[in-house]
Image (cartoon, rainbow, N blue to C red; front, side, top):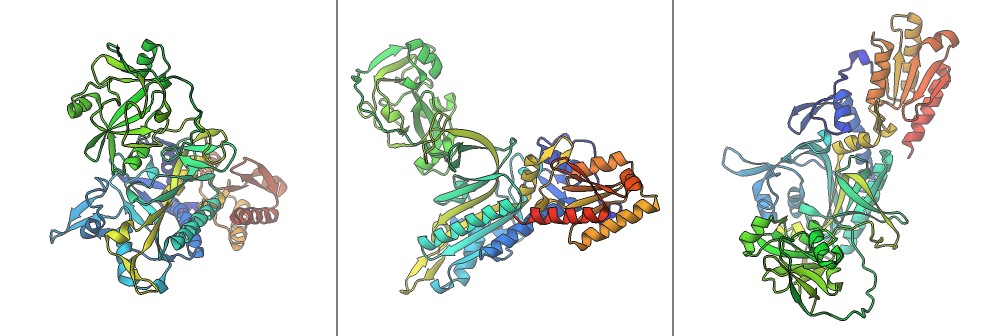
Length: 571
């Protein structure tokens, strides 16, 4: 492609609404343009990068035995009513009615539609397993779209759905997809981790997120420094060491005056104890029921763990005035002893001895509180946020925190949708059984943004070769000189004959502008036909990632670039 014939509107100005580097560089580099909040037009360079990701995804999905289909973006509401998600999904689901007053929505995901296909077209176990996927535009009406392609309302996604006859088959399908995802993100040239994750609104019993590691990531990951364990903090399991038999004598409960002392740290200082000796009682609204969550005073409740322990669809923390309205008890002085509410306790709380807790009376706390003897929670489990003091649940090693950007998610759905929508097949005994399902998503457009978040410098984007819209750019610094034009055209032709994707900058612009634009858009290799060619008959080849500059004859440059690109694409 010739730069002079391409719509490639680079700019020096950073858009005021662009908070993260990928958004800034995608706009400045002429990849995307905003249409309205959370919705973007892909200009030629942006579409080329998107197509690179799409093709890698398609190749690996086909390699794994999945079959590509294309489902409608507009979905009938009655399918969502069948699955039970019409009311549960929330305001992100953009609902509307047609001229016949029938409910529809713009698809944020396609579990309902694909389950409807399965119940219509798959009748026998002989047709299984089946894995169907599509690469399609989705729409989620985010309350606050931000970060450009990272969290938009309209985005490109690959979503796949597997149908199996039993759990063993479903596990094989899940593992095939997990392995395919490893290949996809390795081929994209990304530094990523697969982490244990929560299934969220999709549902299901088991899931992994694929996270690109980047400082601007929205998710925090817990990674073992000594083994391959990695998990989202929402899911990171905490394994307590074996309990030692205590020789401490249990004290009797005593009420003490703590006027104006509400916070754990303040109460602990006032009573001369450590925060870890205080039982912290937090209140949540879980599907319209007020529940109390108990953790040690130096810990924090992990709301996703709480939701999963309760089996709730949603949990929301309550403010002090909401606690008073719901319980008529004084917030800041509440504790588990004789608390007339459902209680969920972290496993660590049940090991506490002679603890301090609220007395459920204004200005008072209790000392000598002991679980089992003094209170019995309805549920005990892993409820708290993991800390760096904890050990790896797999190997016992030390842990670290890293930021990540979610680019893929694989779920084991089980019969969540097939049961609700009566999607069944006949087994070998003639019995009807629900399909065992899996769900596998990749944010295709998000991968482009995540790659930039991970690969950039102060000059612009540094695309991994597999994702670059062009692999090589040729800069003709003197486009009015026939000698330079002839050399540039010959290089352009030779590289294309080798199968490389080349952008020839044939504009009549200052050399500085050409260098700046080449760095900004992040093409992996730059070939400069300039003064060195006039003096020595050699061109400069600059590697964008390392900044290394090499001198070659045009013939040597073609050989070098062909080898480097093929090597980068052979992962």
